[in-house]
Length: 243
Image 1 (cartoon, rainbow, N blue to C red):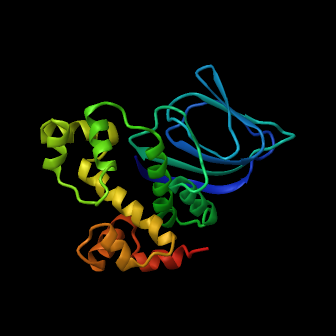
Image 2: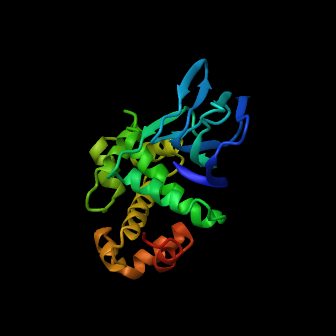
Image 3: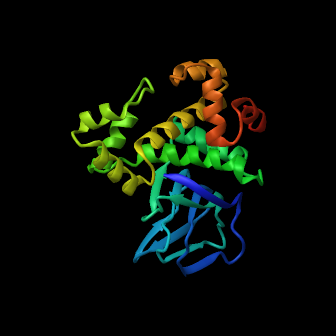
């Protein structure tokens, strides 16, 4: 899943009389719940937004949101569009010590930065970590995704993927693009860069990251990183310093 656009991001309590009834919009809301009482109703099902959970709402699906005026919702939120679009409400616990928890912490630290080009890579990291919690389906695309996610040495060859899951290159590429909105190679490259973002945020040196991710040298990693994130690893680290 790719973050296509970011329209708004902040961390705050909801405004007074926070009620949206049967809204159907072409963007998704990404919520991290810090405190308070609030609900989402979709297709007759009511879900309480739980503290310490991450929620991603579907597009073009009527939803109702409201909180308790006496216990207003405190949340980190972003309004985004994704490729492919979100089709169902996603509810994911954010457990300490996981990549998802680290990604959410990084988002909260820099949520007030009013520059989409700097926040989108962080939100991309959040969604990528969230995707790891949301198991891929048992389709051709899902099997291809599982294969790529299992690669520990960050070395990818399309012919090896096709041989491993038993389908032609054309069928795998077409199925993957239809389900995930990108090619297997694009997904692999994005996953590799997202790992690099997480390691940069943990203070690991650029040369060590490049070696771990299988790049020929630090320059190759820096070039790929800038192509995906719009910033070099060094500038990214200055923009988002370690705690």
